Image 1 (cartoon, helix red, strand yellow):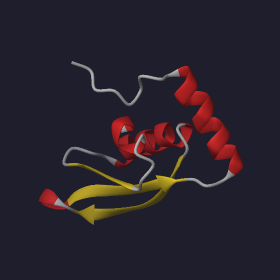
Image 2: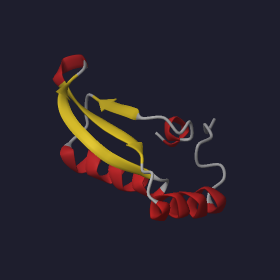
Image 3: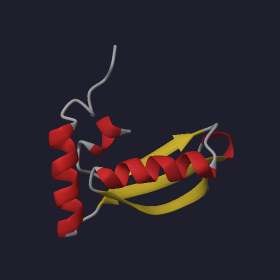
Length: 80
């Protein structure tokens, strides 16, 4: 997810095993990196939950994102 939000574009997150609790946790993490929750719907493959998040334009969100990207510069990198 962090690799996707590093692009600065809106992101749809889909997981066939996702629960509302798991999506809420992902939304919280995304918020720490300057994104905001927009919507969740049922759809996608196997009628899975799909969550839409997008960059939050507020100054507070931008400051929070800058601080967290500086603290965790490799957060969006793929781990091998």
